[in-house]
Length: 210
Image (cartoon, rainbow, N blue to C red; front, side, top):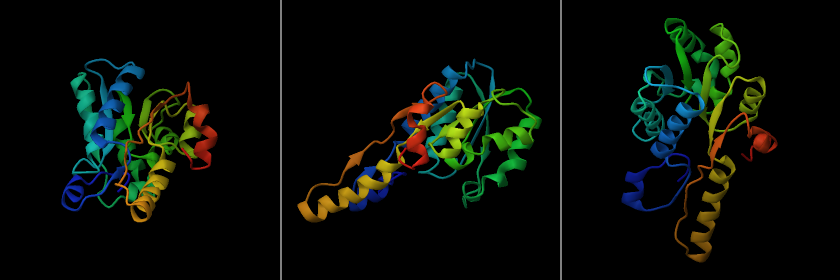
């Protein structure tokens, strides 16, 4: 299994997992956003995510928990369960714009995946905000997110090394079938990408290797 852990399935049928540990990574991102965004207790932030989804939403719930533990007031925007905001991030423009207009004192906005984080400049400009005015953070790396860093729209993302998430499960299956080895369990959460270090992964992100 990869990308999103399925502990009940693994418990029932066995198997490994390649990907970031959802809640752990979410909490780490929340703590890092609080620090790098220079937030303080009483500040207001928006977090978008599939909060009602037991497995997939653990990451964003972790981010919310970390921010709340630090005293930040968090406005939660639930993404549609069918995932259309990931398929077409522009569909979220009215919701995000309305949230920012209704809460002009928001200091930070968190996004649930690379598709939406890569569309940050569109959301901010639709709400009349300038690059760097709001601390935008989230998960994944992509060519669009790299451009967001270059333009000053994106300030932080959690790197999950997607190439490893795709390659290692196949390698694990081959090793199980050919060599009889046990399934792999690999945490691909590699840390954080920021304006200070994004150039290190920029070219790899463009090649879908990071």
